[in-house]
Image (cartoon, rainbow, N blue to C red; front, side):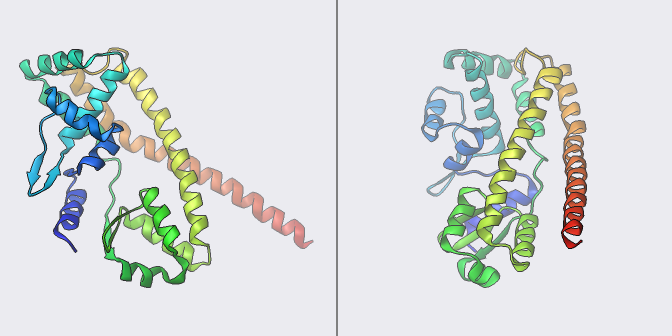
Length: 255
């Protein structure tokens, strides 16, 4: 395993984000070229360098998301610089960025699994084609670096293996994964919209008092498990209804 992959795995398990330029841009939903522009305008601190590799942190990611949010609400780059400067002068930028990290972290608590391509072929056998591997990478289930493959979630890897060993084609599992991702994104959008509307409010984060920011952080921590429980409970109920209907249909065909 390369040192870079090992570092990324350690970061994932400890919750300390380390991102390459493309990764932090993708996570923040911004273009890669914007990173240099934001740094030149003083909106984004420079990354930490290790040799030729530039590593971005969770603070960079939170800043990028804040910048993108302010741009979406009509702020100019100069206006965003003034907002960030006002927070920094008042000593509140650390609290604001800390709140951003607190709100964003803790949702995906996954253990990554790293192996080489030979181990991947041995694990899946002929069930996995190069096309399947490329699609899994496009869906961000795996990250491929040279001959090294990192599965972002041990639980999803184990679930996939279980289905493959029961005879479900990997291509169809990836189709289902693509569908689940789109539905999960819609659910996340709904929960975030409720939180923004009723907890954060129309003023956004940058104009709120320190006490209000503390309250938002506490509320985010309290609601984090609730969202997961709602989704898990409703999915379990839907599965129970669907399985009962399927069994009933099978019994009717046997009569």
